[in-house]
Length: 605
Ligand SMILES: CC/C=C\C/C=C\C[C@@H](O)/C=C/C=C/C=C\[C@@H](O)CCCC(=O)O
Ligand SMILES: [Zn+2]
Image 1 (cartoon, helix red, strand yellow):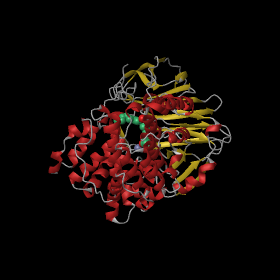
Image 2 (cartoon, rainbow, N blue to C red):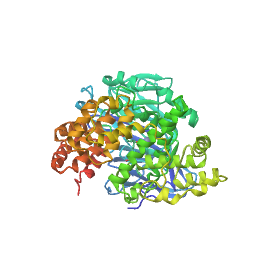
Image 3 (cartoon, helix red, strand yellow):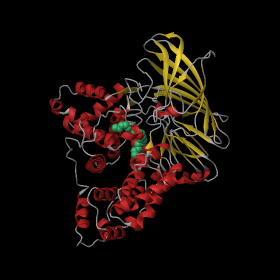
Image 4 (tube, helix red, strand yellow):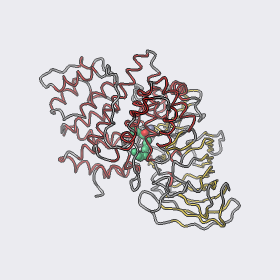
């Protein structure tokens, strides 16, 4: 299949023409699980073209015409699994450089559009109304509208959406005030993966001068409490990165099947309800999504081979901003390093235990020719990426100089899509007089698989207690008491449990005793519950099996569900039960969850 030279995951040819703006008109039909409507594309021609090529997946194209109603022919190629169909629109006459074309496409989505999940009322908290939401990243926007589904292309959009009463429509854009129909405008150019829509019966609460939180009414009070500090985080982010450019920053708490912790849809971050821990302990996810307002959403990876530019930078900024909220400078430094050490633990598990050190997907820059981005997803771009930036910061003179570089980088590349070479060239030029720059082994950092070549000298004072506890627990002759963990924060407990995951399993009686004594087995914090269940599975606790299955059935956050299923698969005695459980629940999952779990459970081989 011929794909774009700029993006191995798209048919479109952004080097020839780019969509600059989209006017969308959509109607939401819950009965048919379908969006129907039209997209009016404004296309800017870069090099003479005789045809326009777009991405589409499972769309029914009803007609294509020019703005003044002249019908255009088109061909929809046979679908290639997971990439969809190339949509070719021959132009009535060749278009030349700088020309702007307007093309109106009337179409319908399919009930199995991979970007959309249509929930039955039983899958919602209210149990009365259906619910629909999207997840376009990485390349699922093509199942919602015909487009250049590549982050190399950025467009502004306006939308008008009709849905029956009493549904609310939300999109990744500024919401209009009309009470008759839902209107939206996104004046900042976005890549297609940031297009988002949710339609449900929702309530909202004000969180701050530019923020509301939205959810079903059953979660609204808990959500407003959990995310009350949003404005404080936005202001801290602005102090580091400059003014917030997206006007509105709202949050939408989705139903439990939402597959990610958070998705940085502009103006409206989508989050999993597993963040509602009741103790604000998962605020780092909100800070992470806020930081995407600069890295990812303003400065965007040109294609998903450079995904680390989105995620590595965002994790790096998230930890800086998190630390900046702590008044005591030394404590802030300790806390930043503590989070980085947890990230390093997760990276170690991914590289050494899950993917393997020679796996090409453990490189920072990956080759996605013939590899679907959903199959390449892991903690590597997040943690190896942010560790690389931390290495550079330490090498080049610390945060005093590196923060200035970051602001300059954001300023230089804002509203653009870039690749790793552009980042590298800019950094080399910015620090051209810095001798230390010569010591960077670029090839190893960017293109070699495995663990990073250098691990920063992190402050370990906050992990000391964890290390002591780990030795105690591993010494099976030592007595365990609640007092051992009395002063532990949820983060320290998470760090401790993650360290246990990264080592050989504890004998089952020791693990059970630990769970009881340390009150772990009654925790409501999903980050703790998930790691605890994994430990129980790895120590072969059959009595925990139904709890583990319930946990993966009750929420769909892939960060939790996939490792649990993989651990269950590796336990031969329960493998069949795990597969049976997956097959029973597959229909309730979003496409990306079912797709990746099928691979984790080796079901399509
Ligand atoms: C090297 C990686 C190459 C390609 C991956 C590109 C896209 C990955 C695709 O599967 C979509 C990812 C969407 C992620 C959204 C949110 C995450 O940041 C959530 C992280 C996990 C969690 O907290 O639940
Ligand atoms: Zn992210």
